[in-house]
Length: 479
Image (cartoon, rainbow, N blue to C red; front, side, top):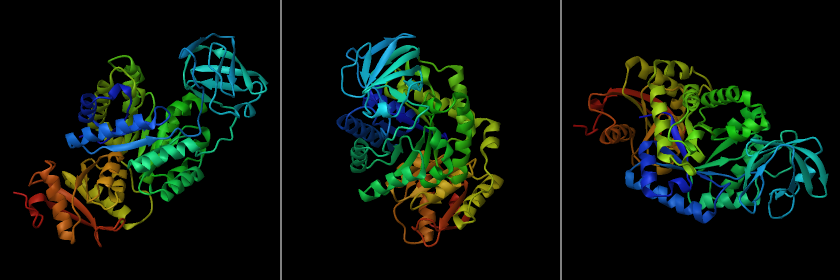
């Protein structure tokens, strides 16, 4: 059972029950809908399909909605794409016009106000570089410095300017309402720049019935990196979105930035996803490159909670093989002696009862070599705190909330079992152990650590530890 989780983006490449089933069985635990592409009808169809397949297989699946955000993109070409040549002149039109070899429209009509002569303009995640030669009315005239094929809806990055775009666009608000109405578990918020952006999003969700949705802030610009501490504090989790981030800051800084953000998230007990180009070559090829394998393994060694597939699963030729490749790399990396030496975290954070109990549970588990830590939880808080210390045994979260089960799909090492609401702590502890055993996770002679809180079924009250063998638990009914 891998501890590092896998997020997969849905798309045309995995639009059948058979492929989705194979992806789930291979290790997909969170399905991501990218709202930079597709209609609400398409997303609804995919959401319903993957939920049906997950239900049929008995696998708990989290659903993530990734917002379009305040991004700038080109619109569409008459023939779908063009071939740009070095030195040619090309125009970004800040009004609607049909794209051709000489021009294309942009989705941000005030873009011409945000650039000046000499500014660099990067397209398609930085693969194509242009320079502003002139601005005439609402036309931005560019000179191509680094050529390439440019196709519909590609991204535009402006490393030398900060367009005055609202964080929550009208399109985003409609997409967020879709997510609320369809009970998604996570919102991946694009282009977060500060804690104020997160608070704005949280306010919108709370006002519209989405107060239980976790906000995963995507770090993909320089401001987000600078303000990372306050963003982590305001968010439920973080995504290191290396595509746009690698355009906004120097690419050679990405590995250092990734490690720093992962460490900060681990210390704060906030789940962190490492994303973008994990297995990019598998969009076209059945096997990953050695460099990609190393990239995935290093993210796992860094302590990431999850790794994510984008186009590999959404539009690539080998979606199932991509998930299997991630699973194999995660398995081999986590099985190495070096892994737990790398990721073990010392005690940090507030001296709260739950934090201290979580750390103590991990210390006891390591010294007694227990089979599992079992954490009954109302809201998922205790498993997150235990996960922060990276125990080398199973972490079983027992909860009466299917919503909490889905959210814990993103937390490192957490495996959830469903337990109905209990009236007393003996019932709570014993039923948690029994349900884990009935799922085949425990045998009667296994030694376990159980954390729980008094009063029970109240978030944030964990204040007890119990150590026993499964058969010693009173009234557990394990034969």
